[in-house]
Each structure stands twice: as C-alpha cells, then as structure tokens.
Image (cartoon, rainbow, N blue to C red; front, top):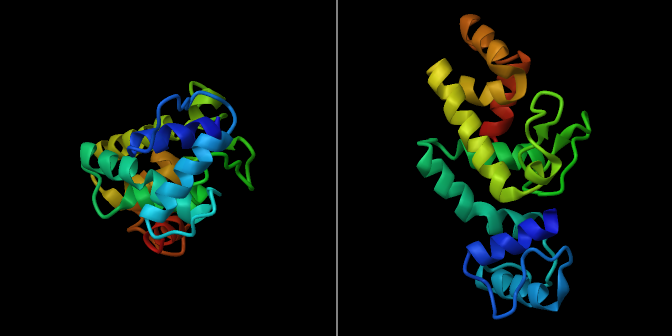
Length: 180
C-alpha cells in the first residue's frame, strides 16, 4: 500500500507522465524517474529513494492543505505525523504493532479503519486531521487535542483538569510533538 501511496502523492504534487500507473504495487522506472525529478526540484539528493526527507517533502502539500481545511494551527498535524511515523507510509508501531501507517492508526481502537486505509497516506492524513479537529471541538484546546491522539479524549480531559502537568504522559507527548 505504501508504494501506491507514494506514487499517488507524486501525481497529487504534479509529477506524472503518460502511462504512469499509481495503482501498480511496484515502483518501476517511471516512478523512480519522477521521484528523482521531485527530489531535484526540492533540493534533495536525487537518488530515487523515498527516505525520511523525501517522504516529508512529498507529503507536506497534502498535510498543509488539511491543516488549512480543518483549521489546525501551528503545524500540529505536520509535527504529529513526524513524531508518529517520521512520515513513513509503511510504518508499523514499535511499542504496539497495531499502530499502522503514517498516522499510526491503531487497529484495536479504530477497527473501522482497514489496513489498506491506514497504510494509504492520502486517507491517513485526512483521518488524522479529522481526529485532531474533532478532539479540539470536544476539548476546546489544541494541546489537549494533540494529547488525545496519544492518551484518548478521556486522558486529555483529565490532563486538562489537572492543569496540563508537563511530567504526565500527555504533557510529554505534547512536548514531543511541539519539538518536531
């Protein structure tokens, strides 16, 4: 799924050629050429490998659009995705292997999200933006909305009630996201 997501994102960012098939489950020479062109255009090493720097640059346009669409301030979505997965669309959680994809959508807590969706960056970015915006509507605080991504809305509510202690799990998570 991650390869298809990378290819779809290349097309989303305007990198495509006649006959380019984002749905194909392999990179192929066309995609490699497009990746190199994208890298060159963005001042990255033009090696055709989608590592952390290329991945972050590639998905920034969609992330920024969703921050705008959902009125998410202070690059919270961008920073959250950087912390959760390093912008790796194929990421699997280290602490919990049920955390999947760029947004690390947990299959236990979100069984309605399929593997295909969780590993699809276009879906995962929108899903994470919607999650943050929904949490903000409930909590009325962006730091708490970000904390809820890690500790749930109940945990974030408790964190707010306690005065946002920095040494708590929620406080540390928010500080990590802010530091990205």
